[in-house]
Each structure stands twice: as structure tokens, then as C-alpha cells.
Length: 141
Image 1 (cartoon, helix red, strand yellow):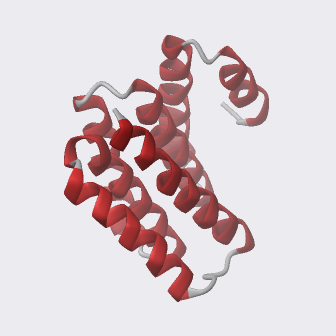
Image 2 (tube, helix red, strand yellow; image 1 turned 60 degrees about the horizontal axis):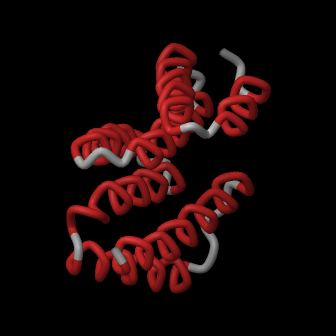
């Protein structure tokens, strides 16, 4: 349980870092990102079941940042499946939401809508009504 919670901090740190880079459309300090990725890799080696889907999502975001869209699509799908397999509904929702952001940025509204809809359903099942309301208000479905 402690490793699982510990794994959330570097995971969220990576996601925030990558999201800010994507919004600015720039790849920030490679060494800073490299340090964050190394910490995540250690967590995956200590507890793969709890962290594999997190690493896959981070790899998808890195691929997106590097304009490697085929790899990004593959990693988003793998992250979603991995989170589902271990029953982390809330993190499966995050994976779907980030995939929706990716597909929307690519102009693929069909896949974006599909992922956002899944995210909304998963957040609702998890009881995160404020997140559901936020997505319904800010995402064009």
C-alpha cells in the first residue's frame, strides 16, 4: 500500500510536467524529464502491477510531445488496458481522458469522443461527480 501511494507522487509529477510541455508545445529540459522517467522506471521494477499502466501513460505523453503519434496511440491503448486489468478505475479514467486530449489535438473527434465518454463513465462509477461535471462542461462531446 505504501509503495502504491508513493508511486502516485512521481506519476502525477510526470503528468503535470508533460502536460505543461504539451500545452506550450515545447520539450523542456531533457535532463529534468529523464530524472522523472528514471524514478518511474524504478517504481515499475519494484511494483509492476501498480505502476505499469502509469509508465505506459507517461510513455504515451512523451511520444505525443515528440510527435511520434503512432507510438502515442499504442501506449494510450496499452495504458487503458493495463489500468482496467488491475481494476484501477480512476486511473483508467485518467488514461482515457489523456487519450481524448491527444485525439482531439489530432483532429480525430470520433476517437476523442469515445475516450472522453469512457473517462466520464469511469469517473462517474468512481464517484467523482465534480470531474464528470468538469469534463461535460469543457469537452465538446
